Length: 179
Image (cartoon, rainbow, N blue to C red; front, side, top):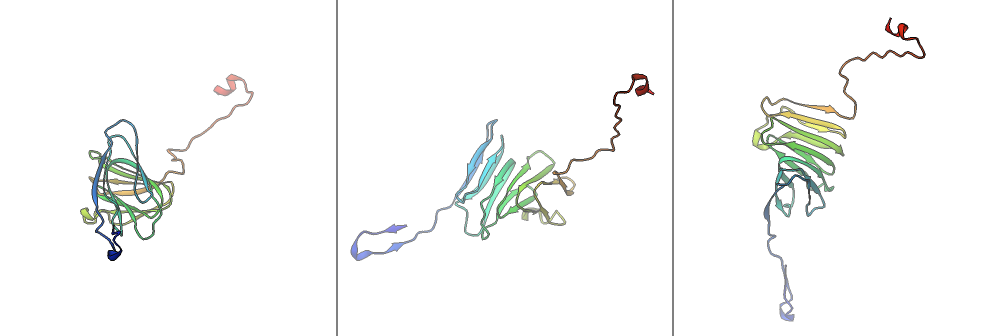
């Protein structure tokens, strides 16, 4: 922004907004909190890395992740917030979720805490996922980078491994219990 104090030259000249590519690595053993200019934030887990353009361009908020991070996204219906992690992208309008996408792991996981997100193939993978996945709070999406298989599990319900039988003895003699 340029403003001249000369009364003859009373005009405001807007200059092109400067964009900067930011790369943030967490090379520590502790979580690292990062605030974005739009009000969103990320808790970057140890040894994770994000890359993004700052400030976010007009119509999108794209972040590239390697490692694990928890995102709290500020609501903005006009600019979707998308996290790209290897083969998948996770898009939210306003929510809290965790993405785990470690470089040497064969799995990518997305766990939704609040709101709603869309998980789909990243544009770079040319549609390796055969369908889009909509997650609700408590859902955990898992994608295998080697096989291309994906699925969603509801982590709010306890998993049942098998049927458990419970025998209850109340004030019974020990020989009767053993029988």
